[in-house]
Image (cartoon, rainbow, N blue to C red; front, side):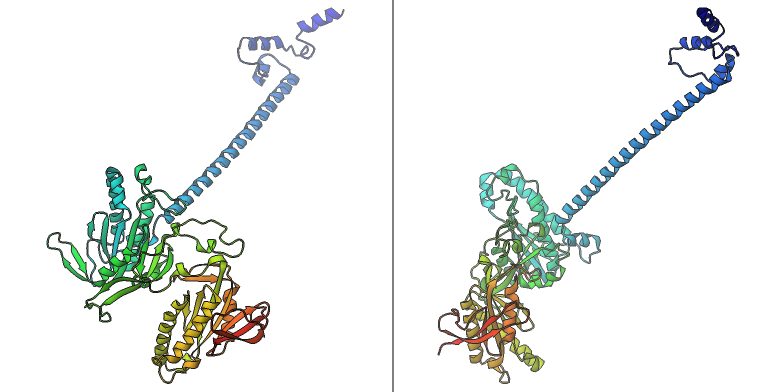
Length: 556
């Protein structure tokens, strides 16, 4: 009976579809004839096969659910891919932005901003027009060129071609005028010291980044020095600004310049080492207000030097009757190549413990150095003696008399600085900040200056010479020291500066006073033939702790 029932069910289309006459086998057979995977029957299939309502709805719902699930999965996958794509796109954009910023930063370091401003502005003079009147003259020369030619003439010929291209390109950009060349030496003229400074700075940058041959870079005179920031040909550059005489050369038709300004510029270039830019104080005064436009180069005071001796009177300068021609000289270094003195000359956190890179030069190649320079300012072991000289009573004098008195005092002070190892850091309206290597030298300077003021007849009779100045001295460790951004003179930071200023403020007119932290009435050494009188301990404004005050004078 069981087998009969099963056979009866099969013949009637199965238990589910016996009442409706649904032929499931017909549907299955149609799918077998198709190689594609079997899909759930559609409503049309069910109607064609005489299918029942219950089966058609159930299978169709399952199929729709499957399609819905697949669609949801595809959307989720698309969303993930889209998110991943956007993430990668954002990363690429950020990377490109960083690369662009890096490129702009490299360009800013390799380009003097003033040249871009000069190119963007309409200039009143063209490159071809030679400057007239007061002119800035620049001399350049390649260091070690003879040895480079001897080592490999072919390589040096190619290198000199690169050098000349850089010189002429930068000269044109700075509205310069090429006067003449002699081998690898150039003589150029510019309308003002700002143009000339921009030219010199850009040349040094471009020379460093130029594509020199391996043969040139292996030569000791042009080798790569990553610490010193030297690479390739090293060019000396010297400039001066002043009045000139000019005339056309009969053969070349070029304007030629003559006069003391040209000689001073040549003498300034003679002080240089390879890769160094030197300018007289006359030229620097006119360029100092445009340092930001020049890319914030490092400024260094190199003191006063004898440039040449002229026996003839200068017809263009009534103040010069011939004799020794001396000038204060300033060094410029492109910011990208500057040596961080403040980082390397420190007393706290390990003096000189942090290595720094940048261009360092030996003292100028001078015939005679007249005054001390930044290179002479004391810094060893992070110790210095700071002295302040304050003038007293100048405000009470008539303006003309005050100016005259200040000028005489200024000359006397600077002449006596050379007695010891004194260095003038700064001067502000009759107040000088000086640095010495020892307390003894500072005391000797102060007493000698006082004595000289008393004996000098150059002061007006109405000036009280005995109470014209007062001097305060203190020795201690500084936090850091380096060149002042504007003057290039040594600038000290730390408590030693404030303490010396407070001691000078405590002193009375006509006194030379030393302050010693925590000192008793027993005076330390103030130098030979110097007598120190203990004035007591004082709590000076801004100074933590008591300070012993000693008044110094020559022994009778």
